[in-house]
Length: 121
Image (cartoon, rainbow, N blue to C red; front, side, top):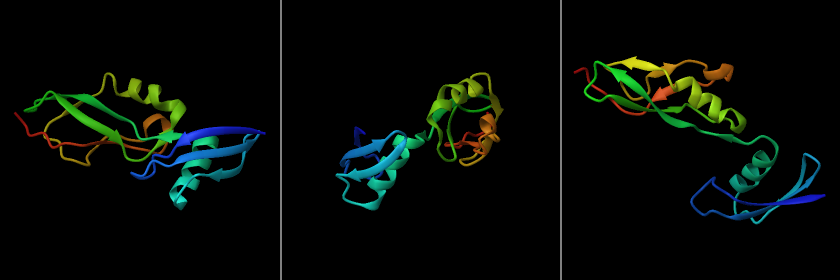
């Protein structure tokens, strides 16, 4: 049996979690003050995921760079590949918050969306 110490990022409290594992199976989560912490501890030890934020180039816009993010979290091991998929991407203005700039990144079923409005130049 092994133990992992984590700080929960599910809410602003930041509980200090202790997760007991038997192989890849979570036996228990302690230290959490809410259900979010328990779920976070289990997920982080068995299938960690993250929301990815980055930026892409804009053509014909009042700004040359557009901040973007994944619509929801993707597997943690795909973060660098996701950023790589955005490296040479360029979008044309106008762009609105929530516009999909890349569909189904890395076949995850998750879209990359704009997080800022950019007007046409």
